[in-house]
Image (cartoon, rainbow, N blue to C red):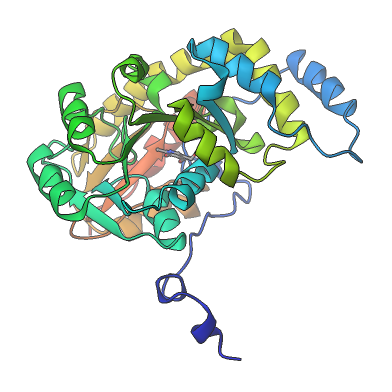
Amino acid sequence: MVIRDLVAKSIFEQSGYIAPEPNGAIKMDANENPYSIQEPLRKKLLEEIGRVDLNRYPVAGIPQLRERFAKYYGVNKNMIMLGNGSDELIQTLCLTLKGKINGVLIPVPTFSMYKIIAVNTGNKVVEVPLDKNFDLDVDAMTGRIKDKFPAIIFLSSPNSPTGNLFSRKKIEAIINKAPGIVVLDEAYASFSGRSLLSLLKRYDNLIFLNTLSKLGMASIRLGFLIGNKDVVAQLDKVRLPYNINSLSQIAANFFLDHEDEFSKQIIEIANRRDELYRGLKEIKWIKAYPSRANFIFFSCAFDSNRIYNKLVAEGIVVKNLNSPPLMPNCMRVTVGNKKENETFLKALKSVTPK
Ligand SMILES: Cc1ncc(COP(=O)(O)O)c(C=O)c1O
């Protein structure tokens, strides 16, 4: 048997997604909420989790939890689908929307999993560079839409890794030109104070994605999708029956019960972000970009691999994005708590240009 002959070339040639092991480091690489759940809420959650019958399958389809999300967002339950992280929902979209119209179009740079998942599910991917302000280049995207007729266009707003919001006018221009579905991924919208969810009333080819991962519950892997019920009904045929495990279901309900506590943390993180941005601006050899998310994108005047290694040696992990031509010597740092941000800035300032 020759493995190479069994595996799609597009998969065989990949190096694979690598998430660094935390190993006790200060984690500022994955855009998580730095605050863990404190007592007495922690105890309450553990008690609820302790009552789960682990010998039983989870509730399939989870109408009750979908209903709660539907209520929260003011939509019908049939417009909601839950996923094992929004990564799974991206995968479900890429597996399902492959009819006569197919293929995926993305602006770049953007969230790396759109491309990885699209390729791994057998889709062709078209990449269109963002403009110099990291906003959508509508003319270039429209040109590729006309050539390629993609079934899915993924737009992350705020965009990762650049941190900016795309302009509403440009997003709508793309929705109007799209022959298929536009997925507006609002994973970071809570940090930006802007959601375009109300556009659902106007466009039946628009699907929203969101996740609890950035809001304080990354470990439970709970993403959700909101949109046209006819599209959701098709996606639901592809969803695996028990995709949300019982422990995650309890934790997601717990999140909704205590949403106000998590919201306070979001406000705190947005304040810390602005503080961290000011700190980065003080470093002469860094160009930091304004952010509406819970992370900051910055480029360095010299080799970011060296800077990354130095930070790792100091026990801090950030995301090293260094990849010319789009992101030469670029990095992304997740907003941490006050102490983490200070430790990071101090370590960064201690790096000297050679
Ligand atoms: C834009 C964007 N969408 C989706 C995700 C994935 O979220 P989840 O943890 O729900 O799979 C991320 C994670 O980094 C992201 O940056």
